[in-house]
Length: 290
Image 1: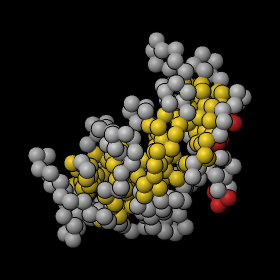
Image 2: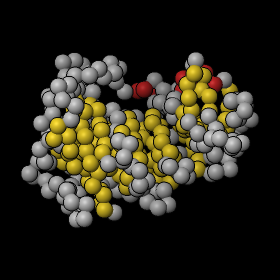
Image 3: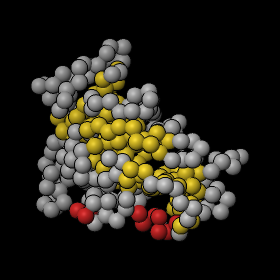
């Protein structure tokens, strides 16, 4: 259960904070320059910035963090002041909704995505709820442009999950789960199976790219959404010789979402496989895994 600690008035060294996790500034991005984080306020704004810092917390991860830390960032000096510690296991990747009303997190070595409400004045967060993302060790999450769906990259499970966001910021039950098939890469230690480690929407918000470290492939999906159901349809795959080429439709055992935007999508499956004709993706992918 998440536990919130009382706020402190202690200013901290920003270099130390950066070693503890990834920070998100609630009123502007956090940029790294020379090893320091510099919060960049929007033009003509003097309101405080808030940074949200995740961390590993468990012995298995050699974690020393306590959960999600909230800091107030002075927009003039850049000084960080601790506001809150919300105790929760391994909040390893965080993201904000577009309106910056809610914070969402995945949790290393677990199978969950969690939601938090943000107090605009203090920056403090309050736990809302959690839902299964459908696979162990989710390492990344993205929110679609409509703000209604979360996509998770489940590293250890080799799956990609879709979790709905309700109007009040709470998370609904997972609506889709897709397996990523293929031949493992040459490194038998780090590439024994599928390991998706990101899920990024294209600038237009129509497609989701999922790089897979274990398979040396990049999968491309289209999110077919008609509340309360959303499903992911395999669209294309990337290779070295040709940037993107069309894939076969989803396996016949599963009814794929329709192509026509005027028709509602088929009922989502609870577990599907992305069936593609992708060649091995031969670009360099990070050598260190989550």
